[in-house]
Every structure is written in structure tokens, then in C-alpha cells.
Amino acid sequence: MWNTVNEQISQAMHFDFKHTSKRQLQSPNSDKLFQISDGTHQYFVKVAHRNDLERFESEAHNLQLLIKESLFMVPDCITTGASIEFSFIVLEWLELDQQPHSNWHIMGSHLACLHLKHRQAMFGFDHDNFIGPTAQPNRWHKKWNIFFAEERIGWQLQLLHEKGIELVDKDYFVAFIKDMLHSHSVQPSLLHGDFWRGNMGFIHSVPSIFDPSCYYGDREVDIAMSELFAPLPDAFYIAYNKHYPLSQGYEQRKLIYQLYPILNHANIFAGHYLTEAKQQIERLLK
Image 1 (cartoon, helix red, strand yellow):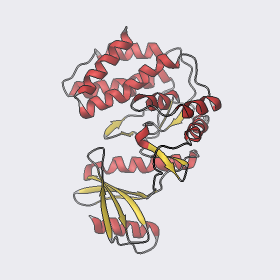
Image 2 (spheres, rainbow, N blue to C red):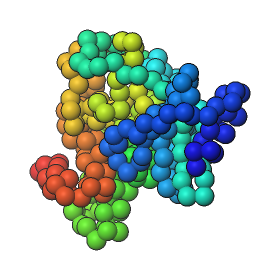
Image 3 (cartoon, helix red, strand yellow):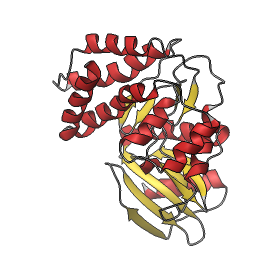
Image 4 (cartoon, rainbow, N blue to C red):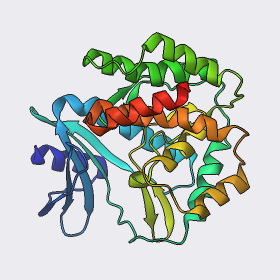
């Protein structure tokens, strides 16, 4: 496989590349992560099963869109490809600053600037993609409440159903979510889609984001996600609200939007995330 990686980097970069060092990095999931170098040029390589090539190609497309549309430092995708057994994506190597950092207000203003671009009239995306390893459907919808209820909550509940897990009656709960979001007025924004602390950082003090799951939706989804697992420093939220204040009722909608990543974790990891998902559903139904 590594000969294929070297060849494709050489073709993409227009010089002969052959790595002389390869260092495996810690991975939060089943992907294998590597830093490779020829002594002069460094790259970040993700490796997975051959069947994951579509996921890597989707990531490359999402990264290119964020490079085009945002002020964030986003890693360039050098190439994607596959061998007989494995698939891979090669990204520009970006060295993240050590935490803690003092520029969270810039992270907040950059996200607000991305969300303030309302260039799409509908909710969805040009193609389906992934959130982590999970397929993420993005059929276009005119109404946000229908999109989020069906393409996000309903989809995750269906995946659990296929595993024999019933947290709630799917049809009833999808209808409930549609009703809960019915009166919420939304202009579509380009979302990162998986905006939590593990998918962001700083490079020479410049905010950087990566591992996107992009689509056009309610900007509050990114904010709600950022508050779920490890809330960001207050400076981030103060700066975001200064540039693009959150709408009334966000605190109630946040519980709905946070259910999506909780359900996704329940599908991936099961365990205590199933309990957490059940509790979140019961909290919403009260």
C-alpha cells in the first residue's frame, strides 16, 4: 500500500516522493493514523479498509469546501486512493499549537462568519457523507424541521432499530421533532457538522478545523455540538454571539440538536451512550 501512497503523492505534488520515516499516531477510532516524511515534506495519512474509500473522498470534498468558504486554516487534501486491501487519504501536515490557547474569540468570530453566508436556499447537501464512520444522508428539503427530524434523528433511530434496539417509537418521535422545530425560522448555513473540541485547534494562533461532516442547516447545530462533550471557553461563545447572536429559544432546541451526536455515539459505541440517548429522549418528551 505504501508504494501506492508514495506514487499518488508524487503525482499530486509533481515531484518524486518516497517516505523515509513513518510514525503511527494515536487514533480515536478504527482508522490508523500516520505521519510520513521524506526528510523535507511531511504528510498526515489516514488508513482504513478499502470499503472506506467513499468516506475519505467525502472528507476531501468537505475540506475543499471549507477552504473555499471559511476563514479557518483547513488542511489541504493531497490525494485519496486505495490498494487491494486498504483505502487512504493523505492530508497536508499541520502542527497544532499546544493547549491551552488564548485565541478562542477568533475561533468564535470565524465560525460566525461562515454561518453568516446564506448562499443556499434549501437544507441538505449535494451528496450523502459521514459523521465519524456513520453514513449521513443529506437529501434536500425545503423545511428545516422535516430535514432534521427525518435525515438526522429518524435515520439514527432506524440504524438502532436494525441492531434490534428500540429507544422510542420512531414514527412518533420523528413527528414530535418536526412539531418541536416547526415554528423555528432558519436560513441555511454551511455547517462543519461535527464541531467539537477534538476536531479543531490552532496553528501559529490561527484557528483550524478538520474532520468535517458538512451540510447546509441550522447554525445552532454547530454551537450545540460544541457544548456537548467538552464545552469551549466562554470567549468563543461571546465572540460568536457578538457577530451573530443566537435566536430566542436556542436553549430548548439545543437538547434536540445534541441528541443527534448522542444517538450517533450510541450506534457506534453502544454502552452508556444508549442510556444517555434514552435519557435525552425522555427529557425532550416531558
